[in-house]
Image (cartoon, rainbow, N blue to C red):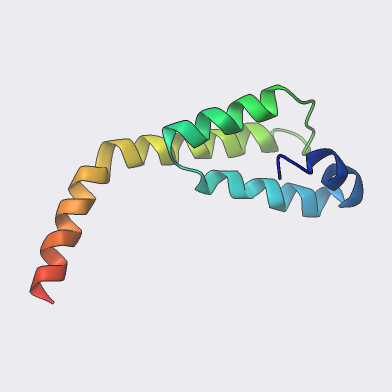
Length: 84
């Protein structure tokens, strides 16, 4: 998306483009979040209303959850796989 952003923004209707950008929520690592924020900060992006802000907030929540719970989830899955 980064490589072809300007072209995609012109080609796709706002609704479709908005849905593609929604995928940033899944980039839930601190380094990817920083990259996403830098990418969108360097462009004038309009997804309608507060959509981009909401996506970035959801991404922050996902990254925070991952940072907070990764160790617990890994331990739980490790125990669960041994019992299966």
